[in-house]
Image 1: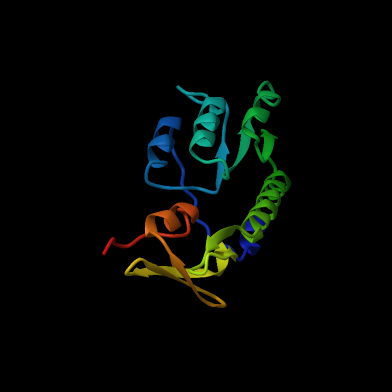
Image 2: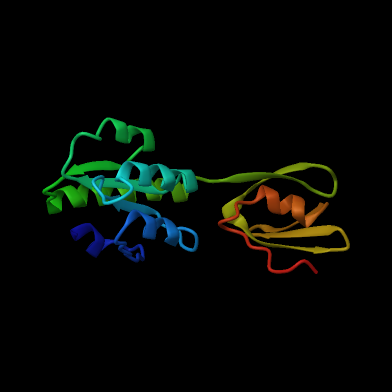
Length: 173
């Protein structure tokens, strides 16, 4: 669509022949946006959307279907849009516009963690300001955009506070 051509976001489009093959792919891949038909062979699109929603709450779902019968029921999975075939470029552009709008809001919303430093003071740190953390002799040093922060404790405890999708622990030693 025209909006995809103009976007500055990088994207990849994957297609699947069945609901089952999409669900299998979700064990190794993650997606921000799903376009689903409701009338599928085997599992229907509503059941597929419920399974997607159970795996990820943040992904957006757009239904593209020839049936209006599931429009009210679709609210259970909070779709971004419900498009009835035949779909026009204008309809698709609107779906992408909504996606980019919510995606932008979601990524700019600041996540903050509260950390206790070595003097037992609580410090609020924006997750987006954290570069990495390291530990030596029970002293954790958190490297941020504004310098370093020293903490006492275990790396496991710090790791539990940070979003898994942004921070990875490369080793335990």
